[in-house]
Length: 73
Image (cartoon, rainbow, N blue to C red; front, side, top):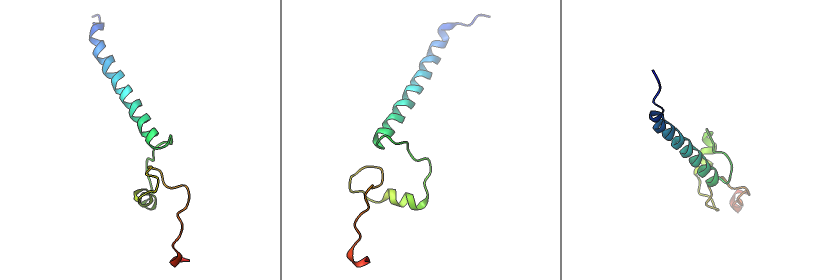
């Protein structure tokens, strides 16, 4: 029995749309993360550091260490 090729057009469109959505979502997440891939897992200590408020407002942790208070030295 022959295959009705017109019936495969919606399947192709849905496949292309899922692919485009995945690519755009990945690109958006990378751009928000300064071009670095996202973290798949993180240790509890790292999660606490990521949740701490940052000075720059970016999602990645601070690069330069914060100055220590004088009471701790």
